[in-house]
Length: 606
Image (cartoon, rainbow, N blue to C red; front, side, top):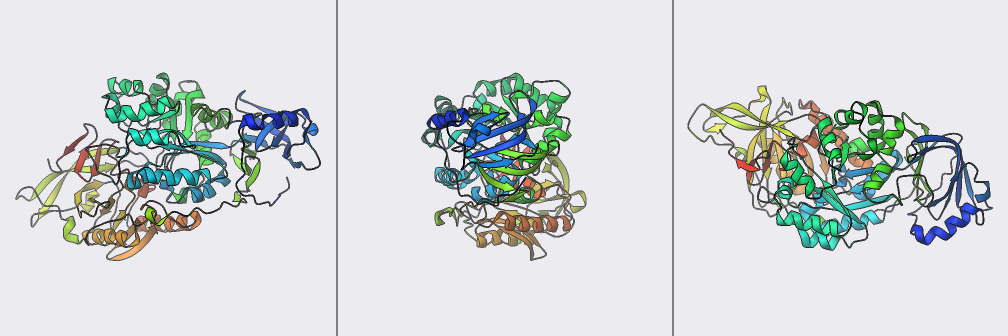
């Protein structure tokens, strides 16, 4: 299979209806195709089979002919590619993800994932929405439309994620959602995280869901509770159509039985495929209502490990047939978002997004095409993707109001005693939920002490949107830090204040102050020295550097955290979710410590 070495800009594409006359003419042999790929083995996601000896003809960025001989579609100007018996696979779709978790912009995220076979993404920009509101969503929406692949946007539904339990940088309600539903690239509503609000018919939740349903678009779900009783049934009745928060086989089964799509995720730190896929491999459920996604992948994972190709390979390793796993990353996603006539298959009329694959089980991708244009080859991007410049108003969003010192992180004992019992946030490796733990901690000079020997260190949330100087202090366990250090980040789902976790309060103060200086990002300090830093000046969430550069900085951060004794897989991702007050059990917010099982603020001390 010869290499073209061509570089292309963004290919424009007409609607199927507009292209239909020429699609018919090419299929009939009356006009030549732009490109014909010959001698491939078609992976048919509709019939679930591999069909050998297939040619495909493409014109105006769409498939015109898929059959055993496309000789009649070839003209003097037709580019002919010999697949040499390799597999022809539809471009992969990520059904639910947050670009901001990659630490990069939509453009850089696209550059990183296209070589891994991802040609369609469904992004929920609720991170930037919590900082910049509707204006931030519009920025990412417009950037997404400039990409050479399909980057659809889900309008954020819960900003803030849990009203009354946190205060972010912006708010989005029914009016904003209604406005966004008229934008050309909005595909539906992002994950509805306020599941108690849905079950209790909260007016705001009803407003955003109703606006989406009335627009005929998909309502994304987020039911982060193990309770599959009445509250779950009320949530489903409220309108959400999918859910990626399941962690058990029974979670996936319950969702599918209720008519939802179960989204099984494998991100940088969320490993929820292996347990839930047993609903198919062991319980025999129909795979058509199961979908694969990543949710959150940081730049290091994208550059070094992959994207949706990684998820598909992982699903196959759990016992799924390769065809089934690929269906769950292509046609199932397309059907869910009502895009079956655009993406998800290699069939006439659909966008010519496809892969040439040499090994199906290992998903070895040799070429990636988007809208009939070669985008990547042998794992390398060959297409030019123009950079997107964010305006200055999207930067300088970190407002601290003052400098912080070690004393700001002192936790005073509630009473004169030698020991106190405190609530502790317990991190669970490779999962988004936390545990509500308790620990007996010593008191010295009226200040409650950390317990490094038992892996209890401090966590602080510092308000950064309005410069109030407010701090919430608490305790966390699970990171395994054994040396003096502190990690601070302006990525703190979903309100995105600053989270600092450390064993040394002076390092915590220095790390927080440093984020104020650079306009956001993540930084690690030890004994007063900066060990690693990833600058993210765009809303304090994204870098304006190349993905490879960001990945290198992220790698340095991971190694530095490990040198401090951290044993968690992708600990930064765990760190960034400790303020997400819609996932049980215990979280931190700007109002205090929150028990997400009861959705109530609780005291730090028992």
